[in-house]
Image (cartoon, rainbow, N blue to C red; front, side, top):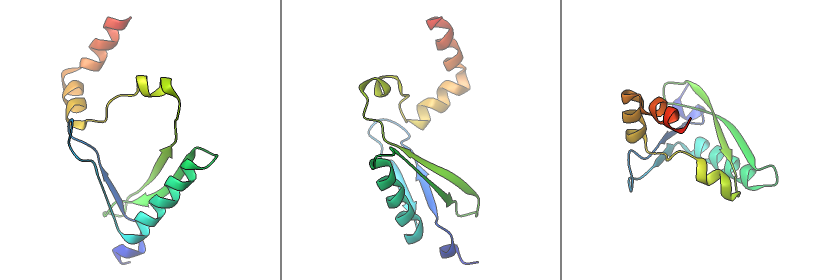
Length: 100
């Protein structure tokens, strides 16, 4: 099968503050992403799509609309580099113990 037979979508998060996040996909994948976004904006508040990485591994893409004030206060920041550094140092566990 040709790569364009699959809805290809790669999502690359920010590595740090003020860094760009990237979404790269073929036409079929990006159209599926648009439809998933529209579903999340609709009354259901959630959109789900099955997309593929270029190695033909499929994964579920979940888009959730959340307009509440409180949810945004508790979400982790999406910076991968900082998260990986914390995990490597065991800081999430240490921080959790401080809050107990």
